[in-house]
Image 1: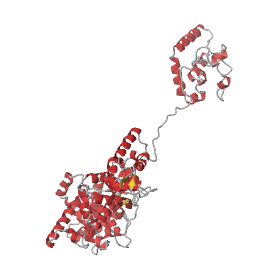
Image 2: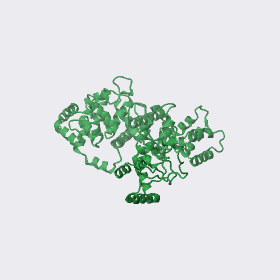
Image 3: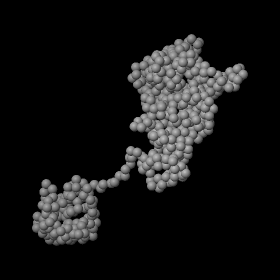
Image 4: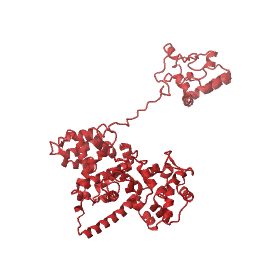
Length: 541
């Protein structure tokens, strides 16, 4: 009998714990809970006294009497554990059953459970933790204190304007209340004044900015929602035009363009093309909120709003950068029909490019032309080309040229594909009496430079993970830059170390702007005129 008692104690049947608050099934499914309860039960003073009494009775050979249980031998063998309730207050143990304990059915016939209940309280089911709402479709509602502060500032600005603010009075709201760049004033005004009444009332602004929770969203989401069309999930190039028109009209660094609307339009177009080149990574002309958040456009907009010298805003808005792009296009567009063909483009960079790479560009492998004329590249297409050509360290550029070299479109650059383009480079070096570099040697050099995962080919991932990747494309199709890379101009190396924040495009645009402005000054001096805007449209400036 002793062996049987010891076996049952080790098994720790949950029914013996006599806990009305806990389902026996729950304890059987979670034996660690039963073990924990048993351990705590052993620490109770009443338990210690009971165990000592049972041990003394066992040594003396007396029958084991467990409080709350039957005095029969069967009861002792089947129910060796004392109740966790006070003596005499617990119901009698129920018979074993494989179908579950019938304790609930018999509870009404026995002695009721003590009003004090079990000394160990546990809930029968899992604890339900209330998770606060973390997603709000229209933005998180502002805290009441923040809401009151914002409404107070709104009341102050709208004080004395019972009929609302007109569009020329709205800039303080945009800048001080919304903390947006000032050149978003018109776009924000039009977003609220949907009926084109010419005024925005205090209540209309509160409904849009405070009650719709716009004030609690991040600035990128705010700008995205202001610019996009209703029921549209992306931005198009047209959505940026109102903002750039206001920038041109109000920025002190662009004031000199107000007398030349044709160049204002070209500047705005160039800025938009640059934005979509760098930010719209999918290349489909539909700029999403996710792409906008990943880019640096919002920071550039804030910089443009704070900086009076627009040329110091190198990202997207620099006028000098626009000047270089436009003049480069104008130099190639000899008939000034605003379209260039293969023969025009082959002259780019003093005939730096090979015929084979120009053919691939005009086959529209890297990007479909927006020009509707067959075999002609438009201004937008040229902007994408020049940004890719002059800044091969950027990811959009690497993707652009990778598509050109990947002849079969399988996502890798094989030695055969690279040799196809390098053959023309080799021929050009021989014609120029340059010492030719065999492809086998140059391939080893490129492998050492890129260190691809698989030395039998280059993947786009290999190229994006290396700062020297742009040199691979220069080696394959740009002879001038290939020669410059081979000679390692110490002046350029020192310049890169002194100004590490500047990109290849920044350095190129700066050099070209100086060259173009010097040429223009020389031309003005020879003509005896310093007014660059008196020239006809046969020249850009």
